[in-house]
Amino acid sequence: MDEVSTAEEYNYRNFPLDLDMSSFQGFRDGAPKPGQPAPDGELTNTATGERVNLSDLWRRGHLVIEFGSIT
Amino acid sequence: MAKEFAEDEVQFIFLYTREAHPGDNKLHISSMEQKLQHARDFVEMWKIDRPMYVDDLEGTIHHAYGLLPNMTWIINSAGRIVYKADWTDHRTIRAAVEQLISERDLRRAGARITPYNIEWQPNRENPVVEFVAGLYDVPGERAVEEFIAAHRTTNGDAAGEMVQKAAEEALRLRRATPAGDD
Image (tube, rainbow over all chains, first blue to last red; front, top):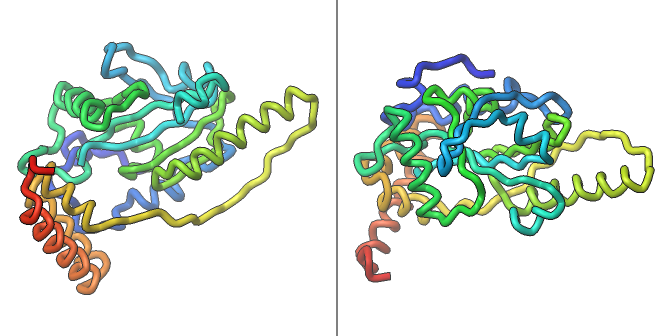
């Protein structure tokens, strides 16, 4: 996992100059690999406000998660 | 694709993270209310049918999955990672989901199945002029300037120049087709 950052660092105001940010390495080496257990965590459904754990979702069936943002 | 595979009990969700290219017209996230709003705006903009979720303001889940802006991950119903991609590409997602379904069918038929590993480096379309045009349209000019600066710093002057030229082309196309006329 990447170093834990503060909310201000995570939600940066300016696009980082270094495109090879630790995050690429984090994806490759820090985050789990296929075959390993998936990290769990709490999510909020933006339409209903319902809070669920990722594990609640994957127990219902295979789960495809797309990450993204407006910009 | 989500509808197509719903009967196979494969769930597709979207996780809004943070603004990757904040600009004066689309600011960085500074509160949970704003994060929820941006996620809802995204649903509206792209007509997303899938359930939309957010994690917390610190991006705890985003960190755990490697922090990249346009990833797709697939987790099986036993909670194991079966697919991770540093770019969202519907073609390889489809292949992975169809694979999961065929494994289920084999299991149901009583076959003995065991995991194997695969590494794959497909290519994706990367239309830089269209991408930069989107930055002009949504977050605004500052996001374009910061994107060019990042390419120059990380990948050298030629890369910076390539993005600069794409930005000029995006502006030229924009002048030819003023916003709202297309």
